[in-house]
Image 1 (cartoon, rainbow, N blue to C red):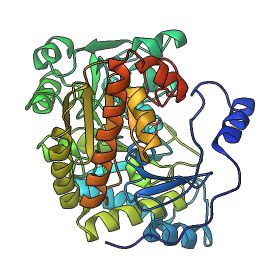
Image 2: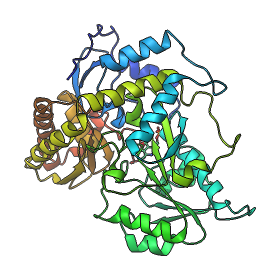
Image 3: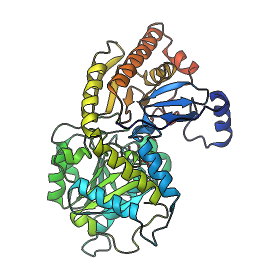
Image 4: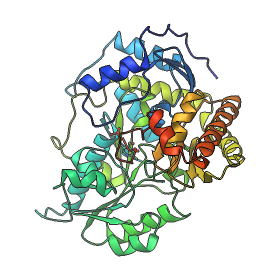
Length: 439
Ligand SMILES: Cc1ncc(COP(=O)(O)O)c(C=O)c1O
């Protein structure tokens, strides 16, 4: 594998000074981050005090090639020095090449809309669903969306409307609708919910922010059949699962399920902001000129970075590596012997450790103190999503540190001090204080 580029020196500030500055100027939607990162290289990052961490969060499943990967650095440097932005009034090579490459990887006729984020990719899919629902020319047509309890599709109002978390939705009602929610993984529930009123069914291949929860085998295939029978679009949100995270380019296609619309973001740009909404078959033809747009979506610099990500994954067989490394991580995680751990799950380099109680924030903080970044995705679930090029030695090292963190929290829990520990460490779920860590 290509080695990362060299690093700069840490700054002379402190994490606590950065926290104060954060609190002074940032909206309080996230809660205060415990540390401020200065730079990264490969699977490692350094905070502003010079402390080194193994990064098993990877910017929440974003930094597929780790940090400062030379392929991305070179691609971005070259493109930004040549042409940073064009708008959608003119074409550019990186955008065209990336769209072509995505369609080739999917292996079906399709068309791409580039956005800047996962939520925006899903907004595009929602508008495709409206067009689909009115394909017969009716003014009302099918407008209903079916989505899953526990799902996460983004924070814009449309994406939020189909996100299966009442705590996130309700403060911002009224939201676009109608939306019907079903229990994730229950194929019979899909059969009842997806009807002639349904424009689209939105599903993740596994609940990502919901705690890396895979559905029972055959669920996505059942969803495909249900949508075909009802004439609804199947939209698969691979914003988190896509681009190698599970050891496959796309988790749904690896299961033999071809959606009508596939949404991508996160790992695609390797850290540069880009989202993609890919329409397949008839869904590729739903938009008319003027239907949708974005000033920055498909920006040449982000597209150049994404091409570098896809090239590197293919050239270095990072899909095979992610599968093998993921198996090793699963084996090592299974070896953690603690009453605090109730199980582990996931695919490839997308793993969750399920806990027997609400210890995730305390363990996240204890791991950080041991130089390991993991994410308390739910109060009782830790998520591990390292860069796809993580080595076996880094996995072993990370699991050892995690086991030590779990032991430390277990000792505190026995002493009745788990809550005190998390307060002292400033632990919180990664996206604020509402007990749910979705971004
Ligand atoms: C499955 C899924 N869809 C959509 C989103 C929203 O992506 P973004 O934060 O880039 O808008 C996320 C983010 O976590 C996600 O996991």
